[in-house]
Image (cartoon, rainbow, N blue to C red):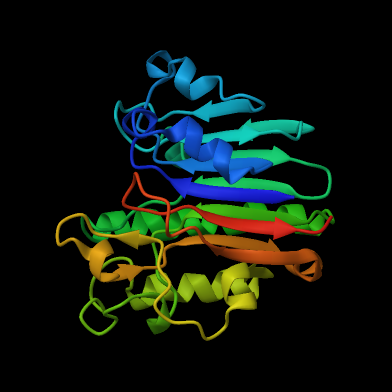
Length: 255
């Protein structure tokens, strides 16, 4: 099974950049999309009717903001939206799908870059997700979480760690939550297979042509619970794919 995760930075914009052809070339069984920035009435056939896929959309109440989507060739047992907390769920950040072998969370985690109150909102969101993940694990479920986590975990995960040590996305309190993910049994699948590989990023700022210089951050992740880890065949970035300031990432499982 191949699962892809991609922050598209506006699904309507990327639909005009060959999105359907790009998705077809990925040959993925499941695709989690973040930051759709679209309401249901703004989603045309080029977005909703990708050949071979069933699609699900979770939009923010605020227009042009946040939002997630899920495309799947594997029929889920159930699909739910949100984490069950109104404070977070009105932003359309979470789609949860039960695929029997695992529960998949496709999440666009908050960005804390606009000030202390946004950092707190982000950390509270992390707590809410970790509580739900713990509940499912207590019930014996395996979990995969994919998405834009908006935090680089360690110095190896961004090009300029010292220069960004006081910037949201690499604050000590944000990085500590990446440790909490690990302690909660959610393993960073890329680092599981590539523990020391440097200069591998999933996001580059548009402002300074950072992608051309590979001055980036690894802020997009796949996490998996420990029982799934022996089944992981590949976990990597698709950094050749353009169209967004993020590149897609993928996970392959032998199920």
